[in-house]
Image (tube, rainbow, N blue to C red; front, side):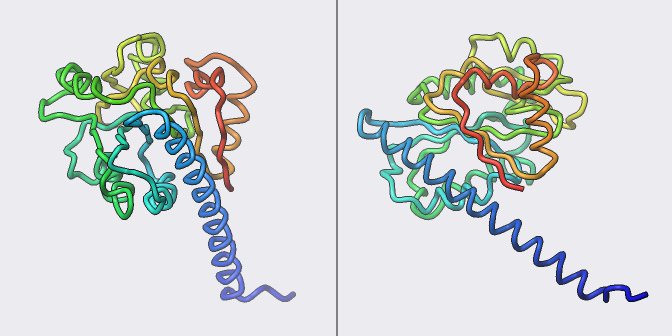
Length: 240
């Protein structure tokens, strides 16, 4: 019996990985184009606009593509849908990710507004950060959401004690503690995210597609919090 040589298998794996990267890059480019158009449209009508983005590893290609777009970036504010309550210079900080990957290149004049402060807990920091957000151009022109394997989006986690509050509050921000997550977090409330003019969901991988299919088949947002955004027109950007 002839077995394939190991290097053939490695080549095939490498080709698959390269193809996957190409497809994900195309998706990121398309999303960057759509978000840039949204910002341009609103900039024609108002002096400043607001973009809300999500952290994690999925948006890196999108951030890099968006940073290359020609826009009057000095009139664009950027903030996060949620953040871990960690040092802004730390490797787990979404703020650091946004500064390093998005507020670069042509987008370097944009004003980035982080969701953390110097106090010890997010509960103590909510008032200060809410005050900082008050001056931004709400409603946001666009919100780009991600989704975890548990159906969470922003820091709306199914196992969070504060989930009901985050889903129902008309306050802009909620401090969140979640047993499945090592750090406390702060998140924009579902209400504040809902108010955005446009909503995008950016996900990759077959596992996330399966979670999304499950979410679309029901309506209990406490089980799969991404469902809280199915009432908005939600543009879904997915690649394998």
